[in-house]
Length: 302
Image 1 (cartoon, one colour):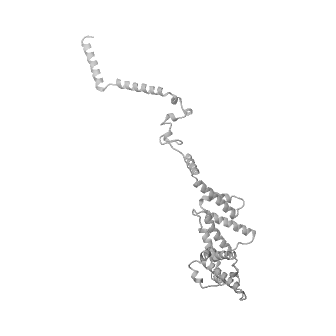
Image 2 (spheres, helix red, strand yellow):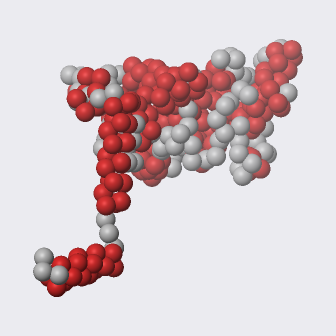
Image 3 (tube, one colour):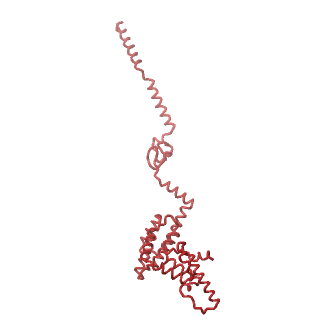
């Protein structure tokens, strides 16, 4: 039986969360038609034996349900109480009259520190809703139309401050609207955005497309000519044959055979020039020979 009781009240009572715990406990007991054991006194002794035994059994069941939701730090302090109403009244007296201002401050601090940090949105929203529900119980919003509308906006703004940075576009979209949507509407949009992000991040084909698209948008710089828009492997300077015909000049259009012949002729001319060159000793010997011939001719009378 104890295991089943632990699932009836989902909130663990720790003392400082009396408001949220008592609300949850009331709903759990009321749904099982056991709330009368907490809200009313024990019936008079005029009940029949069977009815009296049934009421006593139900009362013990309520006590077990309440105690099973206690945190281990406080369970021993109230284990001696055997009446459901007595236990309920004792808890209310001990924890229900604690200064609401202190609890409001504590809840506000938790809301300000609450962050998604990569968690699923449903997990974040559960914690967020629990804090706001307790805050509204302790400090109910004003009943005027303007006050209620501002209160709803404050909840939406508070939720936005908890979200990760990936939802910035969604937040900006909501803030551009003429009126701030309700918290339920905003939550639905966030869930839709989350499912879209998961699809694009988890789908292999989409991830591949994104990778190819990112690569295609990168500015490529050639490692040879240092110009942007092509790689070294496709550089026209290194690989003239890759140059499209519409960009080729008359020089580029010269047949390769003609270019080879021109290079061959230029090479032979350079070789011939090299063959016509003389050393300094050869030139001096040639001059000396010519002078000798002139002297001989002069002496002979020529």
